[in-house]
Amino acid sequence: VTNVLRPMLSFAHGVSKVIGYGTMEGITRGLFRISGHRFPLWTRYTPSGARKLDYTTETPLPGQPEMVYFPSCITRTMGTSADYDEKAGVTEKTISLLHKAGFAIRYPENIHRLCCGMAFSSKGFRRKAKEKEDELNEALLKISDNGALPILCDMSPCLLHMRETLDKRLHLYEPVEFIYDFMLDRLEFSPLPITVAVHSTCSTTKMGVTAKLQALAGMCAAKVVSPVEVTCCGWAGDRGFFYPELNASALRMLPTSLEEATEGYSNSRTCEIGLTVNSGISYKSIVYLVDKVTRKKEEL
Image (tube, rainbow, N blue to C red):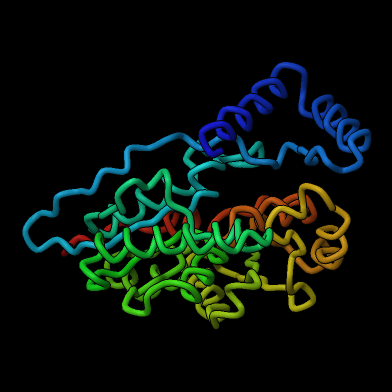
C-alpha cells in the first residue's frame, strides 16, 4: 500500500504544478462530492509522497552513542506539501537531527513491512492488528538488544499505541521526549526572534508530554503560543480526508487564537494537515524547528 501511495500522492502535486493548485482543488472537491465523500478530499496541504530511503543500520564509531529509529508507515509514505519551505520529509529531517546530535542509528529489519498496528486496530481489524504488533515487537526487541537502546518513533499517536501494546522492556519515545531527554546536552540552541504555535495532539496529552513540547518550542523561539481553546484537532486518523467538517469544527477557534504566530509545530503528520488547512499558517513536526535552530556542540 505504501509503495502505491507514494507515487499517487506525488502525482497529484505534479499535476497541480501544471494546471494550478486552485484548479486541482476544484476538481478534487467535485470528485469528493460526486462520490458521496468516498473519494478523499485532496488539498494543496495533502502531503506528496515521501522519498524512499535506505534504512541501513549504521556502524558506530568508538564511543558513539546508538539508538533505534522506527519511522512510522505514515512518515515513510507522506512527505512534504505545498506549504513546506523545504523538500526534506519528516524521516529525512529526523535522521539529519540525530546525526547532528552525534547518534549512530539502528533500524529494525524489514522496516518497509512494519507497522504499529493502529491503522488496523482503529478500523476493527483486531487480528491483523495483533499480527502487526507482534511483528514490530519482535523486530524492535532484536534491534534494541532487548530494550537496552532507546527507540524513537516520529508519530506521537503511533508511539502511544506502541506503549500500550508492545513489550514493556522497550524504551519508547516520541520526538519531543527523545529530543528533550537525549539531545539537549548534545546540541546548541540559538532561538529565533519569532512567534510559533504548538499543538499538543491527543496522544501527546495522554502521555503527559504537553509541557515538554511547550518548553522545547520555547528553547527555539522568542514566543510560544499554545491555544487553550483548542484540544483535539478532529482529524481522527483519516477522518479529516472524508469528513473535513469534523476537523473544521474542532479547530474553529484556532485562527483567532494564534496571536502573531507565523508558523506552527506538532508531532503528528496527519494532524498537521488539518491544522494547516484551518489555521492559515504551516504546521510541521517539531523536529523541523529544532533542526533549524541548533548546531552540534563543539566538544562533541
